[in-house]
Amino acid sequence: MTEPVTYNFDTWSDFRGALLELVGRAQSTLLLSDPDLGETGFESSAGIEALTAFLQRSAQPLAIRILLKDAAYLEQRCPRLLGLLSRFSQRMMVRVASDVRAVPDAPFAIADGKHLVTRFHHERARGKHCTDDPQSTSVHIAQFETLWASGETGPNGVQLGL
Image (cartoon, rainbow, N blue to C red):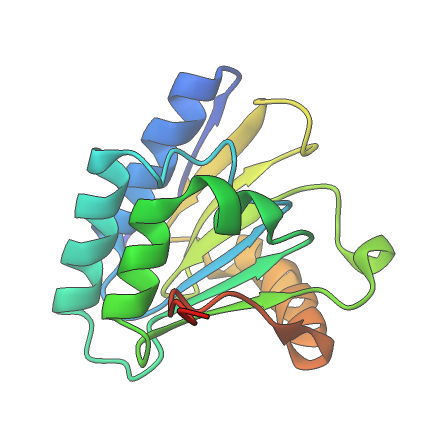
């Protein structure tokens, strides 16, 4: 078994780099809890490439689950992510928290239940990246599952064409 490794970051660039590294490590599942995905960098071409590669290597039916406080940013400013959602609609899902007050102020991403990237507060870049550390992810996973169960269906990338 690999020893857990943790390192801290405090810039937006380092945060986005940690997320890309996390997605690169992921083999089966990816959980994302974020206010709106605005600071993640996933809308960039590198972000879309990393998520696409992950979806292609994962054998899980529902490989990516994204929990948001607000879906407006995703719906209005993320055409690449919406395209990915449309293309992989059976493999990734977005939900919006029904009680935004219950959503933790610390956004996080978890890969395979053992790799974690979290910011200590949603307004700041400062956070940590933990690898091979299932113990550090357990509280976050429990929070995610609770909010996921009560969340509302979010954008799925399908255009209505009305």
